Amino acid sequence: MTVQEDYQPVFIGRVLEELQTVLGRYPNKQAALLPALWIAQREHGWISDRIMAEVAEVLGVTPAYVKGVVTFYTMYHQHPVGKNFVQVCTTSPCNICGAEAVLKALLAQTGAGDAGATSPDGKWTIVEVECLGACGFATPVLVNDDFVENVTPDKVADLVRKYR
Amino acid sequence: MGYPHKSHPKETVVLSQYFGDADARTFKGWTKRGGYEALAQSLKLDPVAVTDVVKESGLRGRGGAGFPTGLKWSFMPKEKKKAHYLCVNADESEPGTFKDREIMRWTPHALLEGTAIAAHAIRAEVAYIYIRGEFNEPWTIMERALAEANAAGVFGTIKIHLHRGAGAYICGEETALMNSIEGKRGNPRIKPPFPAAAGLFGLPTTINNVETLAAVPHIIKRGAGWYKGLCLSNPKSTGTKLFSVCGHVQRPGNYEVTMGFPLKDLLYDMCGGPPAGRTLKACIPGGSSVPILTREETEQTLLDYEGCVAAGSMLGSGGVIVFDDSADMVYQIMRLARFYAHESCAQCTQCREGTAWTTKIMERILAGQGKPKDLDLLLDLSENMTGKTICVLSDSCAAPIVSGIKKFRGEFEAYLAGKKQPMMVG
Image (cartoon, rainbow over the protein chains, first blue to last red):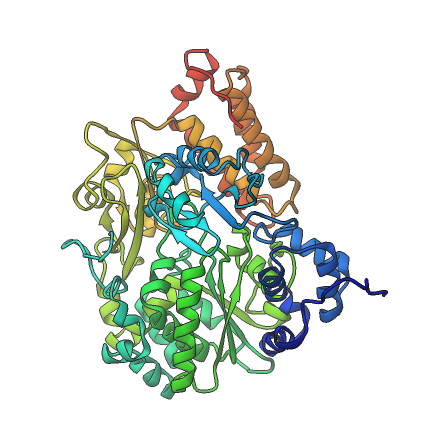
């Protein structure tokens, strides 16, 4: 397989060492696929087709196989996202506690406009997600790795200010 | 309850004793509180003896199926010919349920200890704790706790690894979970073969829920008799359960009560009932995949496996979703169907098509474009979605639709008759 000259591999140096440690936890390489994709997304921000090909090569599977896995799981980004990737739960328990109003407020106040779109300043991508497992703390909002609980429309301005 | 956690006097505090106590989640703090003694005790016992204690206690799976835990452990091969695996299901994604997250956040060592005891009982060398991808905080806390416990060498030869999910409700299904660990799409497998015969990597495997395993150290320490004695109604349902109450209640949160506790007392006494001026209209007692109960049914329900079945629903995960009279049942049932449509792995035609079409039909009804035959169509689809697929996600989508149409038919008919303001559902 030819390697593009301008491609920066993800799994080199300390990142490759990290993957070796992960590989030691499983009896075969394929089982390290989800962890490898998480590492790749952490390093690169999102998972491109080229990165999928690199992961495939490192783990001894095909790029098509990796793509099949990436497209199944909702948390792997297949395109760049804003600096703040925001997930808002709107499934029924949160829905009856006003989750949709929280979503609308976030879309408006960040300039993201539509769910899934990135705001013009590149700082926000807001998506609607299914149950986040914090129903008693409605509405939960994930801002990157931060799990913010009990978000209501009147608290959105502060949240946006904090993460901008 | 909100934090700092304060238990309600009517709760039976076992698993939730240290919720809100940051010291208890350190290794030192946990051992100071008597932690890891049950594990040390168990490691000296024969695996069969440990299984017998858990069998005797009456502990049943707390993930949703309620299968007797000791019995499940005893399905593992008697003769050890191949590697055995334990998988811990921390994929908590059932709408209405938020108890495993609290167990991991506040008592990570309880889970680790229960995992190690279970691994010993089923003679598993390796255990994977599958944590859903969105649970960053529990992950970090579990990682730290695991490092501390490993450094102290408490697990003997048992290896416990954390495995992170990446956004898929269906990976909470035990066979999909195994496929996900194996680096595959989270598609459930046909059973048989059952995991104890051929599971993770084709080897004998047991999968247990977080809350189930968190109870194990207590059972070992205080005895099966103690656990069996925690029973307010049916003797087949013993111990305590964390009920995650959410929706239209004044005090949402996790409440730990003895099996057989009246749902009415949980909702009104402990959670303060619906907001002022509102009345309870509907309640789903066990996470969104179980039938919806009317107010009358809710007020008669005893919270154990048999009690919920007698009331017309199931205990499930214990995720109690409360709807007051301001809730639009048609909209919420549509929203639940949309959840299942989103989460379907798409292997089975009935599920892939059924979850999508029931959602679309209800969206059309909400938009004022419902047709007279729509309810029969929804029921017909639901019947084809029940008992006919590789896993029960399909059945789970059908449950709120069937019970919703049966018990809240008037709300559906109001949309069909043009008596309700149609809404754009995006």
